[in-house]
Amino acid sequence: MGYKLERNPHYGFLQISPTPSDAEIAEYYSNEFYASESPAQVNDSSLDIQKKDKAFYQGWRADLVNLIGEHFGRLDVSVMDFGCGWCETLSYFKEEGMECYGIDTTPEAIEYGRSLGLNVEVSNLQDLNPFQRKFDVLLMQNVLEHLADPVAVVAEIHKNLLNPGGLFIIDVPNEFNEFQVAGKEVNNLEEWWVAPPAHLNYFSSDSLQALLQGEGFTVLDKMASFPLEMNLLMGNNYVGNPALGRQIHEQRMLFEHNLRSTGRTKVLHQFYRALAEINLGRQILMVAEKKYD
Image (cartoon, rainbow, N blue to C red; front, side, top):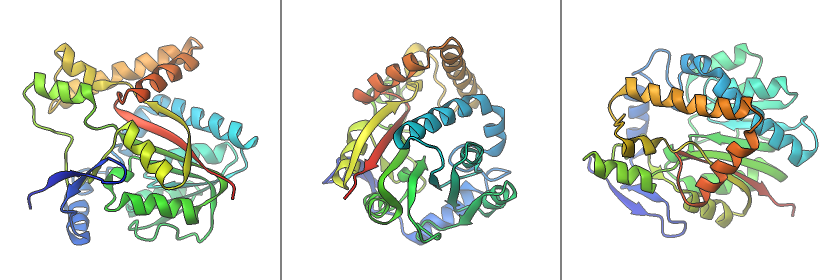
């Protein structure tokens, strides 16, 4: 089926049109996405990669723990990871004293999470809350871009999944940013990041913030991640070149490690906040609050 991109009339993010049917999406994930990797690949990061790059991911998990602790003044809070994958983040949070829950579509990942003692459930993401309770923190990393109706999901999270004063921490790819589009033009590439039926929605910092605010949240913070597409403008065309892509990723990890290890995590965050303000960076991380009634 042919698809085109249309702008959401309320919040400005781009959506695939027509929206693939539930059957088409299910067929893709069962026959292509999960079947293409062993073990199954979840949220673009296999368990092997999570282990290999553990120090990189742990740095950001520690940042989230600090953020949550500062917001609530304590760490004994309830967290639900929507699309928890191989539960590495939940496992880290549990060690910090949080009460952890999670859902994901992949049975193998959920079984692995249960082996770690986590309260996690398989979900087709139609049932957003199999636990039938509200949480202090809702974490969603690299999920919203996959969902057929992201506005309805964000509205449901605000209404029925978060306690008043709770945090919604969300991370999505930052697509159609100027470095990405310029890199495409310079290297005569197609829009490789447009990938239905896997990715159905394409956000920028501005459009994600508009969506969150429009559905009742107050955005407290936003950061980008390293602008990997900058490499495309410096002669390093990693598109379709996994070896070069891995090399560039390792350079990005070293960049962050060297800032953190020299006591400059605050500078790293300031850099990424500045990128988010101008819609640059590979990813966009936002922290939003559900206000007290």
